[in-house]
Length: 332
Image (cartoon, helix red, strand yellow):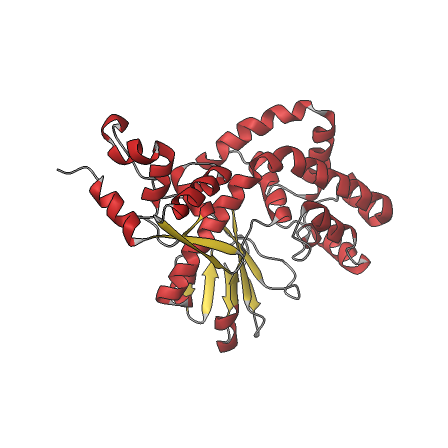
């Protein structure tokens, strides 16, 4: 059991990651490769990844990472630094600059329950050479196994963030934390989560960063070192709402008027309003670039309104857009 204990100051300092964490997803995806009973949502990725083991560079990278990431239990905190997450190269650079004290402490913690692997021992005895090999392995593995899927992961996490933000505004932080995942419970002032060992994490005014993850499964994950910035990586459910459904396009007058894709984009805004382009793409099953092209046309036709919101753009139906949909909706 993991018990995260809040103070009154922490309630206003709960944050939600806007993007997938590059290195948390990298590490947790290693767990999914060796999982004997993977979730159904991971099976397509596993099928794609299985063929990559024929590549010598990928096989070598995977071998080293598996030496540092055991099938269950603790893995070194330095593999998933909180800072430097803007791109893969800068994230890996943060790993290479891990202070020697943390590197040594994390590896010795790793060796408490099992003998250290050759890769871990090299990091202890020859850190300069070992950390260079680790950086190469992280870059090779991520670019080969995760980069082709990264746009989809980003779409899922951004949609999750949008859903959670609306819940926060509508019902407050308690509702947000109470509905994160079936394995997580909000029992004020404690956020309680299923966990392989018993731990208590006292926030003491530092707040909590919530990181939804596509490759986290079953139970959430947190740093082992309580002195590190408090965070909770939790499983992303990825239960996307069904997109607008048209059973017979021959009788869909809106699709004949606007084109089937543009009609789908417009109808999506009736089910999730206001909506980002990434959310539209996720709901409608379309590439983000395609959605962007069609929202421009719909805005020029005054069927939708678009406005900036922080680092994103929100789309809403105009009264004209709602009227067009109503006129061209099938009648009983």
